[in-house]
Image 1 (cartoon, rainbow, N blue to C red):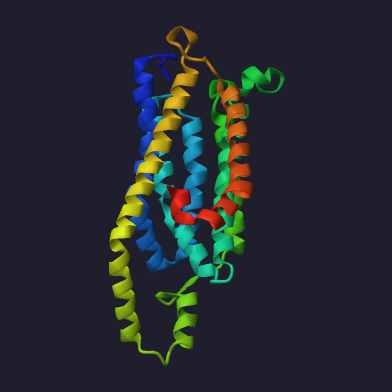
Image 2 (tube, rainbow, N blue to C red):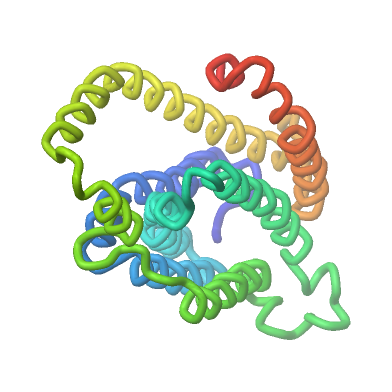
Length: 282
């Protein structure tokens, strides 16, 4: 894209490409949430999957940094519905299996962190790694198109499953679970319940703000550390880097993903039972 490895401008563009996705995701998450309250959860999730199938193809076909930035902004815009996913799970599950449902969601994110970058590194520059198959094809002109097409294919598969399998949890201005709860509790004093809820919300508001601030700082630190790691590892050895390529990053990501998986399966759960969520977060 007109920039050589080690060029000082690369760091700025990497920061912009990484940060633009997160900024769009945050800015439009509220919009997707309000839209899901109006039209339903399923349509919003389906539209998000359509965008997630289109954006990576644009990114893979990018020959300039501005076009790559547009693709990242588009991807962040459509992935802003991640809050709707959590809302959908909360409405679909009940108190008996809600913890298990959110645990599976966290496990799927961990699997994505492991599989996604690994495939991205292995499938990048296929004309160099597998010249007998990909030399002289479009993948030689666009060396990062193949991993992005694999991402788009997964999104399309999820789209098909979502269209035929997802059921709407919002009905007539209320979710199905809310309607059920209203029928069960129809003889209760609604005003008293709302007053009690408001008091609880007020008491937790300060703690919630602190928790959101801590989570935001932690996410920012994680993103910044990953960005710095990628830059340093890819710098040429003349600039005290390790000159690693996409495949090397894939192998490193496999190792990191295995550690994350082991931690979540065998370390975090017993530690959570012993120490509690607050100490584990700290």
